[in-house]
Image (cartoon, rainbow, N blue to C red; front, side):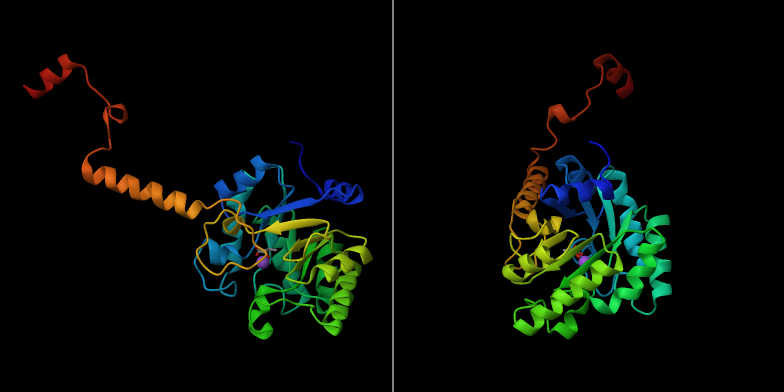
Length: 277
Ligand code: KIV
Ligand code: NA
């Protein structure tokens, strides 16, 4: 497959072909994204939860994110690569945000970055996009701000909140974002945002009216064992498949079924006889 670039994404948007986005956090999950032909591979900070076992996305550091980004790029070679800026890496000042966005490119081999927030991020996003790093916005349910949102809840579900969302989306477009993630907002509002904007919207829990969809790979494969929101469809139940396989392995070792002849290396009889003398 030809390398997916910012131009490819633009073309898909113009031709109204839905844009597919999926997360990855290491070499094999990156390879799955690549083999399935997903256009944008997002190294989401959700990896803090699904791959590192943190309770939420707050603890994950730049170093941890960059380490995982590098691994993903060895697998997802032709997808457009976006790294998720972790909590604390872009809020303190636009300059600090710019430094860390550059680290995603130089040390994480990413092509773009994603960060959470609305109009308050305008200056920060401008700083990053102006030096040529594509930025993906993220509004609605912003998990890094879950404490002030009172948990992982539906956003933009009142007239006033929906109006604020529209304003935020316009600001992000103005700031130069190449796409915006809309998370956990009512379908009619996501559809409205999508119609107003001139850049693609990527929905997660935002209905069918957006220009693309994103899911967390471990969630959609049924690997992650914790809270699963309504918007996550399970395309497989890998948790059970993997656990059953490992249980069978354990059982076969305990009962001597594994390894069998075909898994073992024989030796020439003559050599063996010489050996045991
Ligand atoms: O961290 C993540 O995986 C994300 C996507 C769900 C958009 O931010
Ligand atoms: Na994220």
